[in-house]
Structures are given as structure tokens and as C-alpha cells.
Image (tube, rainbow, N blue to C red; front, side, top):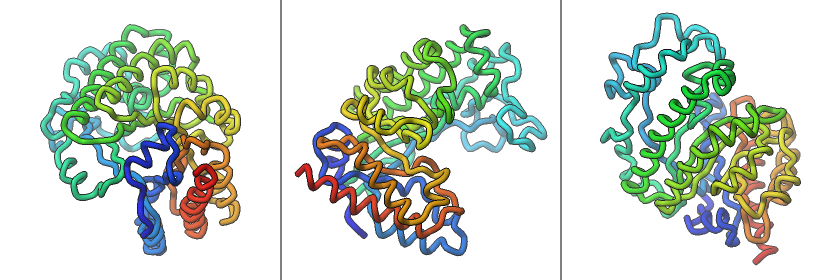
Length: 353
């Protein structure tokens, strides 16, 4: 296996201090077992190339408060799942909070982020698994993703206008929870970063207006980012789709790393030119067209394009996949992705040495 970068080299990339190689973090989007009869080939690729990050995570609440949950009462919703609720999987087919009037009762039973199990086993995992690498703690579904999972996509988008008071209450409850999770990580674990997800973009633009973002989301993201910074941790955010209209706001509140700058939704050269010196780009390989349907050379060409576009003399670029790498992706393309990222990530940095 090629050696991963030390944590300081990843910090240099994020802080625009000139890393020796473009960091690569593709492993967490690649699940060898999903490739069935080619799983061993995929695992061999994962074993051969470095993963420049070590990830752990908090114990997040269950969705429903089921009798057999490991931690009783530690759930977003204070009732068991209704019968038949899991038989239809469209976003709004079965809404967990169909009536906004239910919100106060749900918030009264909100999960406690001070449970002793929050980071159980994480310190041991870091001690044995990090091996000097950059470390993060992360979870999915921060604000918008958690809100629509509870209330339904259409309802949430209307609630910002029809029930703004209730939305502020829900978002404050989420923010209080996540801020405690972050501050506990800062006190209990020796980490380099916090990372979370919130898909607030579509293929053609943001999910909601800049006005809604500034009122509801921006101040609460700032609270979480400030909490991470208070403990000397970077803050990373994954958000799919076109979030161009929010980039200046993200930078203003101190976001350190953004992922993935989704292919075909945002103008990569424009993003690099306008924002590249002010935020680190965790650039994501296109998993909709190039990786599953292109040739190995198409994949290598795209890796070179991403690095040429985002990697500046002072750094600011890391490479990963745009989202999960599914088993319909050719293994040959996957190998090309890892190989080109490693070798071109070295070559490109040498010109700045």
C-alpha cells in the first residue's frame, strides 16, 4: 500500500499552505462488498491506494422510538413506527410529522445529546486506526435533510413561509443537538474536523431562495462552524446540487471544506476562480455519467481536469467521489480513478515545490 499523507499535509491543503500531494479520500464512498463477484478486486484497489483520512462518528438517534432500540428514548420521534410506514419509500409517501401541531410534543421528547454512548469506542478506534492521519467525526442529515425526513419535502418547503415560527423552533432544536455533539467531540476526542451532510441543491439550482437560506440556515450553520473552530477543528459540508448562490455566505461564516461541486450543476472554472482561494474544494468525481459510463481514459481525464481546476499553488483541493460508488461502475474505471488521483496528485504538486 502507498503511504497516506500525515495529518499536517491534509491541513496544509485545507488551509492553503501547500501540501506535498493532493489528498485523496475515495474509500468512504466505495463499498467493496457491493461488487459481489468482483469484491476482491475492489478491495485490492482500496488496499493499494491511500486513504488520507480516518473517519469516526457520534452515535446519532434512531428515527423511531421502538421498544427494541438499544437506547430507549433516544430517537428523533417519540413514537414507534406506524404499521405499513416502511412499505412505500418515496420522500413524501409516509410523512412522520403530517401535522405541524405535533411539533411541540416531539420537541418535548427530543433526544439528549449528552448520552454517555455518544462517542463510545471512538477513542479506541482513533488510537488504533488513525496512524497519524487526518481525523474527522461525521454524520448525515444536518438541518434540511433531517427536517424533510421528519416533515416531508413539500411540507418543509411550504413551512418556511406558512409556519416560520415552528421552523425556527425545529431548527433551533437541531442546532442545539448538533452543537453539543460537536463540542463533545472537541472535548472527548482529539480530532482534526467535523463533517456533515445537507443536500440543499438540485441539479438546476438551490432548493430554496437565498432569503430563506440567510434567515433559517446561515446563522445556524455559523453556530456549528464556530463550535468546531472553538475546538481547533475544521468544518466540512457535503451538499449535492447547485449551491452557487450560497457560496459567499458559506465562506463568510467560515466553512472550511465543501463537497462535491457537483458535475454538470455548477461551473467548475467559475467556482475555482471566484472561491478557490477562500475555501477548500473537496472535489467529487462525477458518479452519474463519467465513472459508470465512461472509459478508464475518460475517468483519468476527469481527474486531471479536477486537479488542474481546483489545485492552486497553495493547495485548496482534495479529491473524492461525488457520492456513493455503486456496483454498476466498472472496476477498471475505479482503478483508473484511484491511480490517476494518486499519481497526478503528486505530479501536479511538484510544479509548486
